[in-house]
Length: 124
Image 1 (cartoon, rainbow, N blue to C red):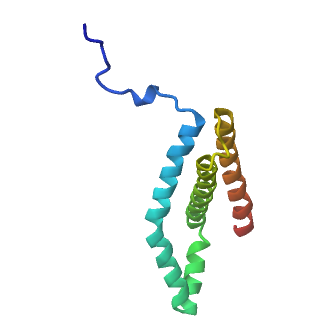
Image 2: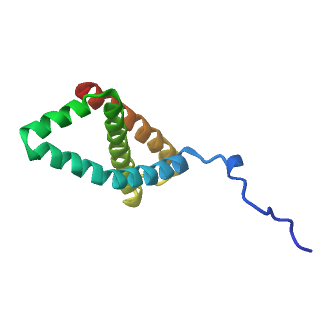
Image 3: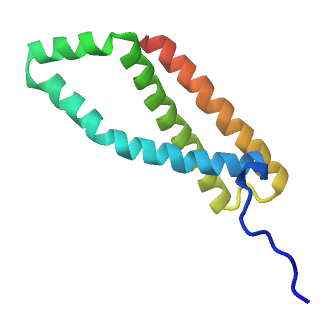
């Protein structure tokens, strides 16, 4: 007798635990940082070209939409760094049980948001 298996996987019904969500966000933030690298390099090149291009770049980055975009990249960088440190701690067996994995996931989220707010307020 064959078991009835689902024809497709219902992804909207799956509830990942927080460490799983952190893992997915870690991958997404890494991809976002990789894709934003050409933009950041163009901005750096523009800032170094001449004093006029630097002034134009500062005017552009002073616009609210550009600030929000840079704030998003800042969060991606800080989240990716915090999550990477978490995975380093897991790989070196500093975090070896489920409770520690779940707690470190909360710490990664809180630290990345807090650091983004602190740096964002300072830079805004």
